[in-house]
Amino acid sequence: MKTMKLMQIAAVTGALFLAGCTSHITQTEKYSGFLGDYSGLKEVKTASGNPVLRWIDPAFKKANYSYIKYEPIKFYPEPQPTEQIDKATLQGVLDYANSRMKPALAERMPLTDHAGPRTLIFKGAITGVNTSAEGLQFYEVIPVALVIAGTETATGHRTRDTEVYFEGELIDASTGKPVIKVVRKGFGKQVANDTQKVTANDLKVVVDSLANDTKLFKE
Image 1 (cartoon, one colour):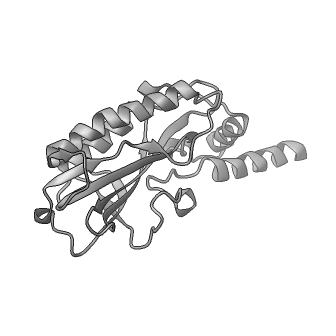
Image 2 (cartoon, one colour):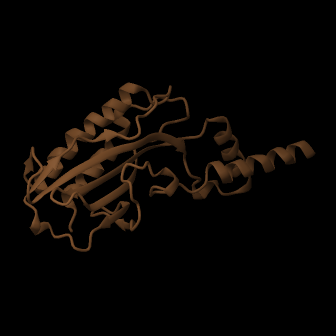
Image 3 (cartoon, one colour):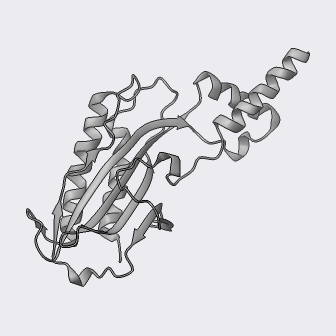
């Protein structure tokens, strides 16, 4: 009896720590270093209602620019494939991101191959692709269900969220200084557990959302 109670307490503790509320914005410990300076970022909603962290130079005026130089999105840092997220999936996400983001930016402003006057340089990176235990739902926050949820999380059988982290900036080509910075976390399709393989198709929805918000962004 005493052992059972201890197991229940341990399971509840595990549920609270491992399957707590999922954050929808990038936490500071997840910053990759790609942007260099993360000061001034503020949580805002995109045109489609997604929460992101963004900074815009107060002096920025779109009318001052006529072109965008697109630098292909890359990984930063270089990711390490796992059994659940393999190299093919990672490359697939990267390729899809470039295929969607380049035309999205072209809709905003003509693209150019060189960084001349009146030009913005786009730089972006996928800074993380991973899965994490799904946050507890309202109906699970009762004693018995909470114990079950905690046990499932601890044993890897709980449904997991797929996540993609992105950092990007627009740089004034003449000054070399950023004028817009964005740090974003997106969610793909859920997988059943920590062994089900994640495919590039599972994560395309994250890229589609990013590209759509890029087209709809209003300065």
